[in-house]
Image (cartoon, rainbow, N blue to C red; front, top):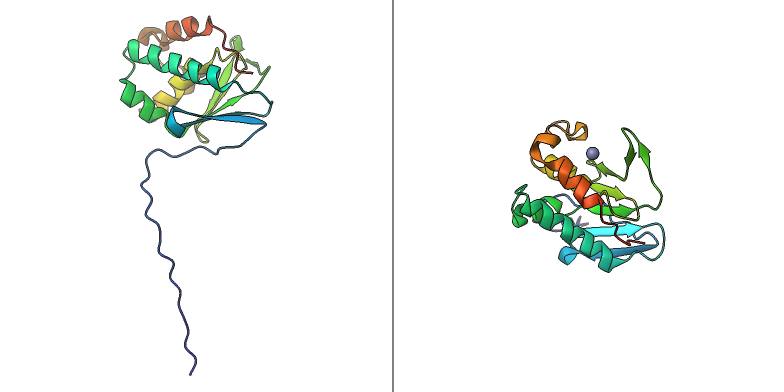
Length: 159
Ligand SMILES: [Zn+2]
């Protein structure tokens, strides 16, 4: 008599927090915030120390401005990927130094990192369920425009 053997693989129960963005290796990459954040570039030589410094500076400024507590901000940014792309410029209402893809949870910034805080604000608003973040709703009133401009005055040597 033939016995059919049914093999059941136990399904792993994975504790799911925030959804993690794809983590391309690129030509260079870094793990930041204890692995919560991934950064990569298709160009070699991503400067992980500068990348970590820019991320830390952005979180510190957002916290100091009362956007959210450090824990809330770090939770919102857990699982994102930051792609550093030299030379990108989007022409909207002026030079734009970054982009946030909410579906992929990926922030794209130029190699000077000046747009990082701005894009993290979009990520934050997405985590808070703000509608139409791409249109920067009440960013002037909330002080986000000022935060963005001040952060953008510093240049980070990401590549
Ligand atoms: Zn924006």
